[in-house]
Length: 157
Image (tube, rainbow, N blue to C red; front, side, top):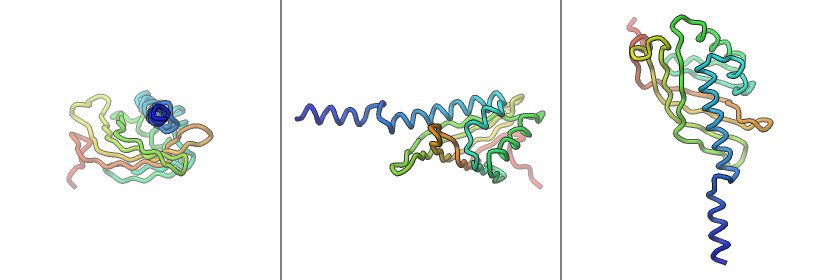
């Protein structure tokens, strides 16, 4: 009896459990999304966003609703001479026990591609993911800027 309970307890903590697998899938999706951002790959970025995806940016608190609006924002950013590159680094993925949802929290950093050492910003973020048709997609992201350097800092007016 003890061995059966011990085996059940180990199985519940095993990475093969659905919860661990879901967390790994969300982390893999985030890593792939970071890669698409680094490459400036708009079609790939679109595949990670739910149709109704929302984002609130860090410093300006710009709010964009919908996949198309976000793709437009990235298109503008990628074609700019002072293009930025962003990486999100998840600290925690919390899975909902009542639905196919996950909340990711972590740190982000953005840098100017040409002058990263001088022009950068960073902070914290939260992202809500939902499993839709078997894929984990971003439904909502909110960013807070907590540090910056150079042109990424607010300019006095």
